[in-house]
Length: 213
Image 1 (cartoon, one colour):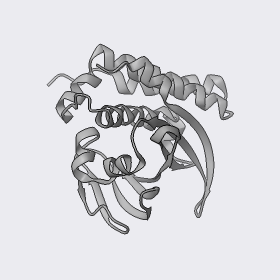
Image 2 (cartoon, rainbow, N blue to C red):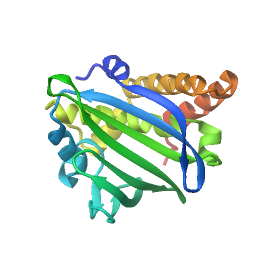
Image 3 (tube, rainbow, N blue to C red):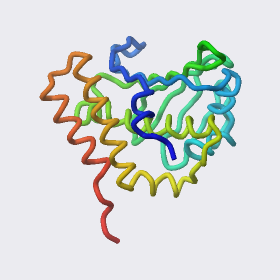
Image 4 (cartoon, one colour):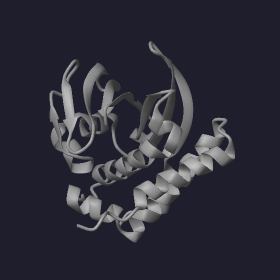
């Protein structure tokens, strides 16, 4: 079993801004150092077979200019790719387009720093209502999966992962993640009251019981 408290503490989170061609955008940045070589981490985040083992099944052409689709989640286009260092892609979900930039860098003792920046328009309605935790919690969940995959732990199927997310342990993890994103929101300059209100709406959405069939 993974120590979820240790995992929460191992991740670094930041909320900021970035200039895009369309204007100013909001960003969340999440990073973790893994005890794995850079080439292995790159393969884990770009090989369709390996992505499906720690994240979700993916289809399409994972190459420069290719289209991808993540099962039950987002799709997009790979706009830049610099193996084995970074890639940049659109993230199209729910009728909105944002972007992700993933980068790897070597750390001491053969370890690798994984960093993901998720970029959204300043006027994004989901950001205004829910804040950084809306996507931040999901990426925190993804980094757990990548940690387990890279360390040879017991990997979960999509169904098992969904069941864990609905368990008391999973909800506690999401609550802790949401609190860290609230803190990062405040650190970026957001009014503490506004940040708390957004975080409250976010965790309610993530932990609400599914409707009865």
